[in-house]
Image (cartoon, rainbow, N blue to C red; front, side):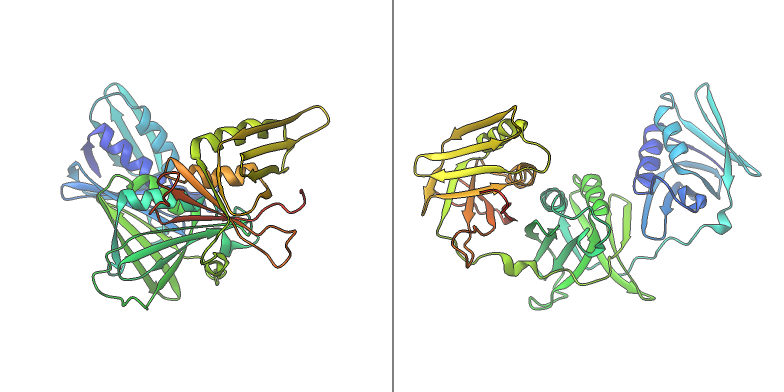
Length: 383
């Protein structure tokens, strides 16, 4: 195999191919990147039986061939090469990489032992890339990081003909965002297709394809293996879906709420960060909403306490809730508007506040049209 390729194009392609590979693997061969040189270009791909990445780039191919090489090492080398064309050639089990006056020799890995990259089925639909990336960033933060319950470490995609919902929860909060979806008229409005995608993979897809115009999505089932594929700009990422039933969290969201407060989003974020400085880990902040505004209080250790008041317009009864500041900040930072509405739900016990609902607010008076909702369970230990 022998080819010459643009340094920046090659470096970006290798970096993309290795991005989703695990840091450590029990099978060293799965840490490799497969490079196939044919025609007028290269195909670079990686696969660890759960996630695959594949990208095509142009190159001057003198001798076609296929080689498997350590992915992270090649990515580090490609990222530091001088600004000159990259020449790659192979001889027996050695791979030569030269660029300007820099030269590297790497050992190849046995191609015949490498697993086959998953095949992608027909396209299920198309989403606007920027909107999808924004929705993933808003929702994935609420997914659990505890592998003990794999079903909530994913983001549930619920697909209908004209819209796609992203839902995530870690038991303490739930985030939902809806965006446009073009299913090509394949599915009816009542037929929701669901796919439970690992949150980490989805976050990388959002970052990688965020400026691609549109992303093609394919959900396929083959040989008892369900997978989802995202494609844009001659790049494709596939992921096995998480098996299991996602909890029915939609029913936790109230139809209407009469008791709510509206305030400036940035002011609430800054006040929360300041007052939380004196808190011990895992402690909650006390938020008191009254007709006069909002008061934040942190009863930290004996050495430090803090409080701050900001403007808030309250509709309904005075309310006090205790919330974990980081969980609240995760929701507030995903609100795209200048103002935010915090709604207070009720429980059967009048002394116990229900979850708070965070939504966007276009102005102090008008609710936002954004389809992002974040439900946060108060910390009931502090009142």
